[in-house]
Image 1 (cartoon, rainbow, N blue to C red):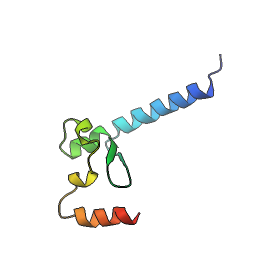
Image 2 (tube, helix red, strand yellow):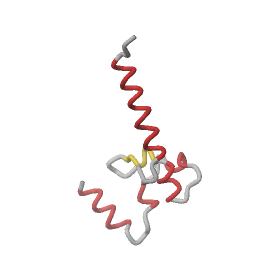
Image 3 (cartoon, rainbow, N blue to C red):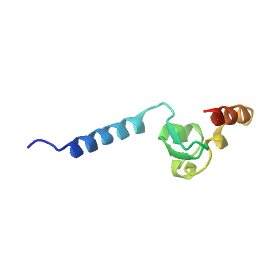
Image 4 (spheres, rainbow, N blue to C red):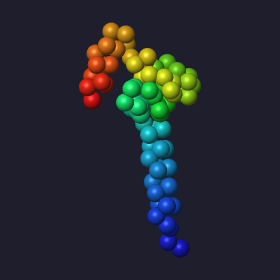
Amino acid sequence: APSSAEDLLGAEQSLFRDLIEQLPDLVCHYKPDGTLLYVNPAYAAHAGQARRESMLGRSFLEYIDTGHRDFIGRALREL
């Protein structure tokens, strides 16, 4: 039987999620103010966090080297 559009979309979303979870690249999603909404395992490992859930709701600037925070914070506000 042919799959519905919703089934196909769900399968694509699952495939995309699995891909992002396995990437060695750092991937995050954040609000305009820098609040983290999602980080993949590689991002959490790079930040030294064993539990990536502990990063959610916090500013990604907390995980940036202190020497670069001001510059990155200004650049973020200009987006």
